Length: 118
Image (cartoon, rainbow, N blue to C red; front, side, top):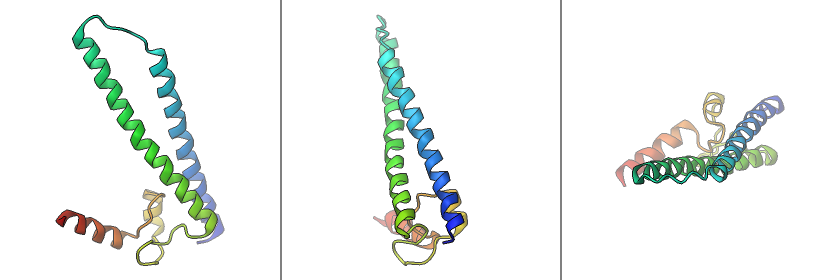
């Protein structure tokens, strides 16, 4: 892949990571500052449910941050944009849609088809 395109994708990945880390920081500060103790059991249950939902979202984002770090490493080592299974180039459109992808569209479709039958 051309160096300009690699830098384009590096910028996208770094910006996405910055936004995810910013949101994670907000969540931590909100949860530590939110010391409201509701006397009503329903209100407490709602608060707990909201916290659990927020933590599930942040866990998914944590996993995405790890994928972003791996994609940045692939840019550095020259393997970014190459399918892990078939070794072909991943289309630029697919990378624009999901820059952390490691599979070309054909291999991803095949992988999902196999998962469906398991």
